[in-house]
Image 1 (cartoon, rainbow, N blue to C red):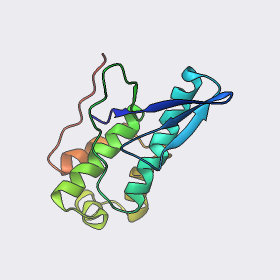
Image 2: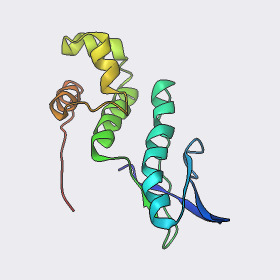
Image 3: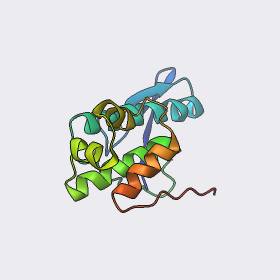
Image 4: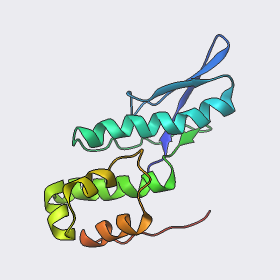
Amino acid sequence: MLDYPVILTPDGDTVLVTFPDVPEAITFGVDEDEALLQAIDALETGLSFYVDSRKPLPTPSKPARGQKTVSPSPLECAKLGVYQTMMEQGVKKSELARRLGWHMPQVDRLFDLHHASKLDQIEQAANMLGKHLVLSLK
């Protein structure tokens, strides 16, 4: 769902990571493996700017043949899925709080990509928006 292609560029003693679809996400590592690990955090931080600004999430482009991709962590993907659904339906955070019977700080934490929200809260919010949270192992 949120699998973003990355550009890995050797840069001296490091590997620079950029995202064509999320220009705010930039990081590096000492080698490709570390750079890809760092890329997850950079992607989550970059996407959090969209959430904080209440802007639609950028759509991941199709990776070129052999191009590496990076996704947010599963918990963050679930949060972003609820956020994306809210944007599509035109539901504001205050309206979601009202529907769920939650206080605004609870809703704010739900969309804080660095907060360890409980999966059942994300599921409850998804259900309130007419969606179901589905987890799978591949």
